Image (cartoon, rainbow, N blue to C red; front, top):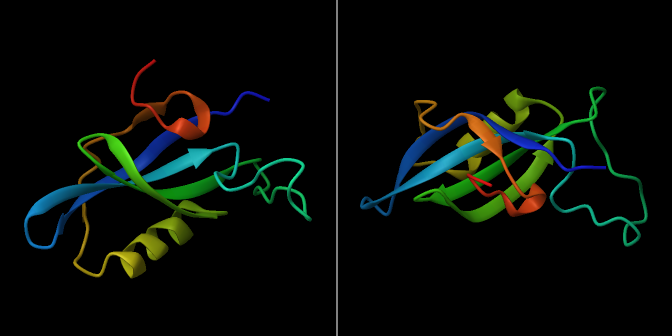
Length: 107
């Protein structure tokens, strides 16, 4: 299976009152933390064969990857819970991601 991922919602937040960080809601056909052959249970994708991952980035480079959710709404709610400083959802970055779970912005 080819891993595909796409940023479907994005925003920014101010870390420590100074550095602007990005938050991406990524729709993908794999769970970032699932490793075939090393899990006791099968990968848990939604009915469409997707999950929505919360990704924090800075200057387009991934800093952290949160848990996967079955809907974009659940992922957004978790992003708000994780980042209490507040997120400005401006959709500044809506695009496919490349290289599977490495999440590169270009080929």
